[in-house]
Image (spheres, rainbow, N blue to C red):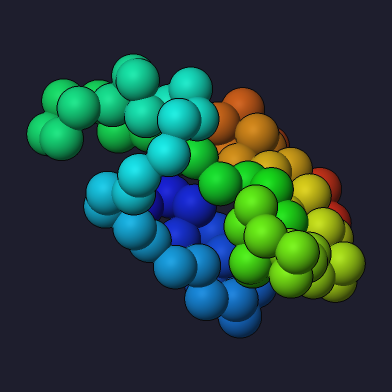
Length: 83
């Protein structure tokens, strides 16, 4: 919820998926209804594991800023980059 709110404060939409397949480490930590896990701070892309796999290079900046905002919020510090 905090990540969604921080993204919204910058005018960004952050999609939330309650469940997703895959073998990333957080999938082993989070069982539905037990432990909230934030997974997916990497860049946006598509075509995973195919010849058409791609990444949106502009998404790197947003993800870096969002991570910095999350760390600042957890430390009770102001956002490190202007909003």
